Structure formats: C-alpha cells, structure tokens
Image (tube, rainbow, N blue to C red; front, top):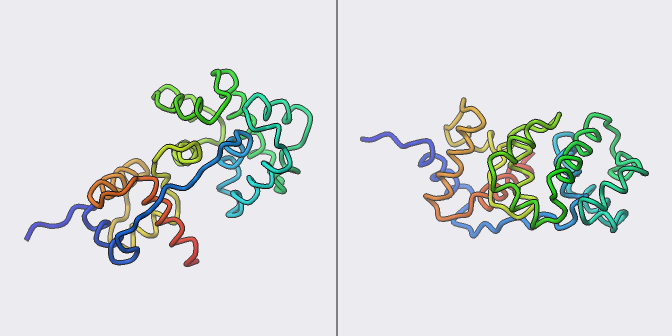
Length: 199
C-alpha cells in the first residue's frame, strides 16, 4: 500500500473535520491604514481585525498609503489601535514607508506590487516582518495565500503532518487546496477560523 503524501493526509483531515466547503476567501481590507497596521499587530492580539476596523472608523482619511502616512506623522498609532507596542508600531511605520517609497497607494496597487518577488524580499527586509506576515498581507489585499500560524500548524499536526518548516507547510496547504478544489486563501481561512474557535 502506497503511503499518503502530507497533502493527501491533510486533505483527508480537512474533509473529515471541515467537510467539502465551500470555503470563501476572507474579505480583506480596502483601507490601506488598516491593511498596513493590522499585520504588524496580528501576532500580539487576536483582536487585531477588530482593532483594524476601529482604525478604519477613526481614521477614514487613511484609506490610502499617503493618507495613512500623513496620519502617522501627527498621531499615535498605538492609541488608535488600542494596543501599546513600540516595536509593532515601528513595523507598521516601516511597511507604510516602504509602500510609499514604492509608489503603492491603494489596495489594487498593493496587490499588483506583490506579484513581484522583489517586493516580497523588500517586505521581508522590514524589521518585524517575516514570511507569515507577508502572506497574511497578501490575503488582506485580496490575494489567495496561505499564512501559516499556530492554528494551521496544530490542524496539520492533528492530520499527522508535523515538523515542517514554514515554506514546506505552506506548500502542503497549497497542494491540499489544489487536491480539494479550493482557493488556498479560502482553505487557510476555514482552518484558521475552526482552530481559533476551538481554543
């Protein structure tokens, strides 16, 4: 009997636990202030999406990168996000400065900019940004990506898939999405939502 590949193991687990879907893509952000700040704060607070909505309501003029950068020059992001972390505030500033310098101003600009490998490398060079943050940002601006976090790792381990590096496990999830006929970002979000409600 041929052993199942990790993607096949994960696919069986997805079907058993989550069913056949559909697994819609998360909506993401059109407000660039929320899109730039939320990833920087995501690791610290599970309520970052709610904080992003609060930022969107408080700073409606920060819907573009230029507008957000103007707000950052005069106001405290930690206060607006209701979470004090100088390091994460610095990361949000770094992402915003990079986007502004790269001519990225809107969600569509950001999504197109991420098509280039050099853009991913530039984001990874920002202090506090790792591969998961880059993939999470992609989903926030309407791409379909897998951002592997503790919830996705736990779900994969429950399927018997463990001990893989970030890029390897992301590839397993992407292959699983193909096997099951789902968008990678939709599968990721379904797994994340299931695991986050289980803890």
